[in-house]
Image 1 (spheres, rainbow, N blue to C red):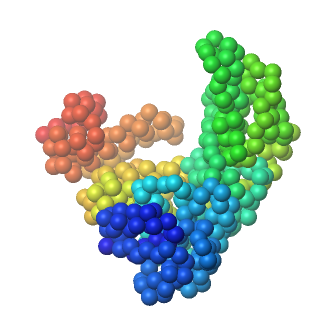
Image 2: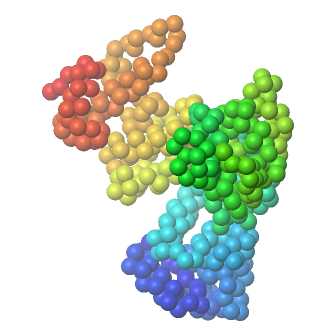
Length: 452
């Protein structure tokens, strides 16, 4: 049995359908037509999750949420809501609901939220101080304080500037802010401003009219129009060319702009979140970013700490990613050896949480499905084949470490590991690496790895 769920809805068809389909998926499901009946079941049954409609005759879903959280705070609550009650659902999340789902929805959509809820419960059981914000988890006090700031500002329409190194989770913070806002039922449009020509970037952001340039065969809405009523995330906002920053400033201040090749203003209602890994104030002093735009974007600034400054979160994130990517080992429960975890704790993580997640995915792919050991956590701390055999590593020229050399070294180490784990069977090693056998043989020759 995967868990016990209480479904509460005054629509018989939806209620019974969920009971049948969730039962077939391995859950034990109770059902109630109203909140009073749900309370009687809740008081007498070991319920893990309550899935309740918001609008019901008599006691509504918000009142049922309050009762559940007062009686047994550990029980998760997911609210079912129509668009008309979306503000109520967002308020309910702030009062303790795990999530909400908008009608109409499929059982698979609800199942995804249930699986995330149960994974979070399991994580919290092993980490009593764990706190979650959307898809983000943390035990460190610095991150918990940041979570509180996000909850405090999410429901306003103020522009937010997310600052942090690559891989710290800026996009996940933006998703959490949008989900907790009154705009949650409207689109969250994500767009990266990095490495685009000014003309292309202007068209992507603000759209264009038919005939505005060669190839413009029809009118096209830009990202600001697509986000109307919702939220737009501009990642790498520091890469916006100076000549476009004036137009962005007007769009932010007046909520209007013209499409490329157009003359009529387009009005939108958009909440703006910007993300950057750069010091924008430094760019202002260098003349690469407009001062007036900087102060307009920097209304609320949230600094996301790098992983090396919050090592307390590493064990939690390791287990979080093991649960998240369990499908790589057929859903098996995989542990991590103490020495392997110690190596992860000692690594400086220049790629932050994104790097850690990739390392754990790779470890799951190469472990035996039971335990992750130090040799599985490439590239965070495993020796190369020559070092393991006792050979001295070649000194880096002038202390420099080339990217090509680094990638080549990682590739060689992964091939050596795959061959060892497959008893030097090249067919199986190639399958484990996800490459054709001929490619494996070419790479072995390139790295001077002898074949048996």
